[in-house]
View (spheres, rainbow, N blue to C red):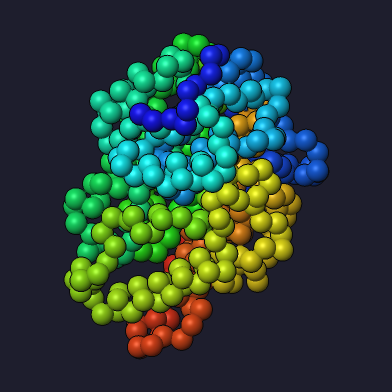
Length: 403
């Protein structure tokens, strides 16, 4: 492990009350029928302050992107502006990487930002290996982790039928099983101490299906279920789970994806190749026009407001959901909150589609809207079945006729 300079001393009865809500609960603002979004939202969980001495933070996936910038943000801010009486972050922040040979950019950025000596420490941690996770936990000299950030992740882009079994298994191993391994290593001690906070990097791909991202979305949908289940269970232990739902972010994530189609795309049919080409142009435009920088995602209030460019064409033209939540507060807000929400959003741009997905349980409205947003934003270069008559999309099922 490495660090900058020396570290200073230092059942059967269950009553479920259903409340009428509009929109997607974000924690920043929750709308009830007749409610006022400007009012302070009702907390998701009881108030459990973090320890009032030193708060020990461990972050996975810090070789680049969000993990790298979050580690630097917590370790190097000379103003200590992220502090408040509930969150006393002191050295070190443990930034973990699968391969410590990749830690060069982290240290270069730490030096450039004037990271104080001893405020940042790197550990080797491979979420695919339970022994590696356990070894990293053992190297935390404080003997505990108060804030665990599960950020390690991997993508997989392309037609489902061209993915190899190894590529599919790798994504699921990192994104799902890797998160489970990490939680299994650190959660028992948090429960025993009855204190802890867990932040998990989520994705719009865990809230809605995205074309040519079937396996990645499957992994992120699984993370949503995992975290939501834990969020229901853990409040009596003083442990809180929050998902940080990210839209497109300018990181090396795309370059690090498993099985990025090249020659393997030849295994797909001609029409699918045309659609994938359209999707790639759509994705390039989204990252050019609407992607956030990692610094934005880690900062408070960094999400785009109502006037932001939307992440899919057609979203801006769709009806704006009633009482759309205000601009989000993300990683640092989740750290600061005395009563953390389950979900925080780094951008509002994809919320209209998320609302649409929930508004029509049949899924037909969302399927049609997403297909138009991705594939109908430019003329096809070749004729496809869609051009010959348009795709046959589902229609909401009609109500059953009385018997």
